View 1 (cartoon, helix red, strand yellow):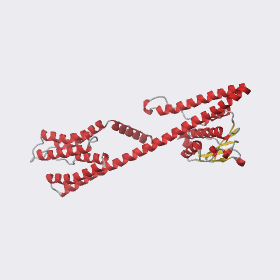
View 2 (view 1 turned 180 degrees about the vertical axis):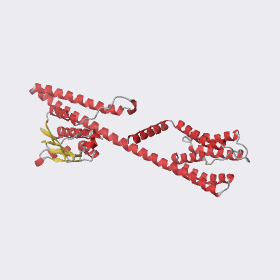
View 3 (view 1 turned 30 degrees about the horizontal axis):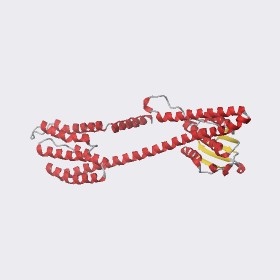
View 4 (view 1 turned 90 degrees about the vertical axis):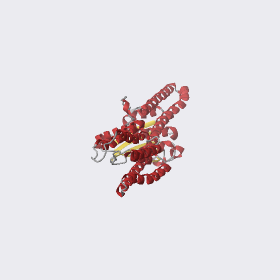
Length: 390
């Protein structure tokens, strides 16, 4: 698996380099074609034929030179190849070629890069040019059939290349859209959680200043701590976005995981919401991606409680059992009467559902026991220990 991954990485780097240096790639292709077309000049000709001349070789080279510009002006290259090839055939007695290399490259390029009308014109030109070339050479049905076949194959290969490139562009756009959605979820979770806690503390601050100054000091400290933590997480995300994997820079900071969950709950408690944290079942190691997902789910669920529920207490429970992890966040607030509590509304529950679905999990949200409060229940499949370590 590692060797195949290295090969794919090298191939991807080569393609990236080729896309950034088209002149170098096309120049290399022209040299390769030149080498192939030089072979008949190197191999001795039959005794009844005159030896190949330098003028013939120079004119053959002239048929190859247009390929350097094949991607910039494919139709012009085709016309240049046809003209120089006809001149070679009519003006000199040079060796023949086993394949029409230059014409095949030109047709492939037009099929891969050009619009429909240019491809139609190319097909019309070939319908005339190929029989004429065969008539000037051997006038055999065998050569005509072979020539039509190889030019048709070059055209089909070019169209397949175009289809593959379009598919790669579509997949790249989809990957970019998925990445934008992921970053948007991360930014929403971090900022929404931090701002909600800071707003709650700021609103309580003036009252506390008049009635309990010691509580006001604690509120301001909580605002400061929440803001610092939000900045740390934002820097972490922005650092990953700016990071060049090939630059050899510092390693990426890890995503938050279950180990940071108690600190998150402490910050929420400092905002005035009583939070009870429980775990049950056979606790097992989780992949880092699953741990980060659980952290973000709890963070977003508690943010919704702070912003919308008007609750005094909330509970967070993680239950490891039956090959899955159940995350339950429950509060004693207004429950489904809150507009944000209705399933499917707001970005919070949507983000929770998207995170769970990314790991094959499911989410249910609705009134708590006896219709009091609100609860969010997330079921996530947990891989075995062997899968975590692999």
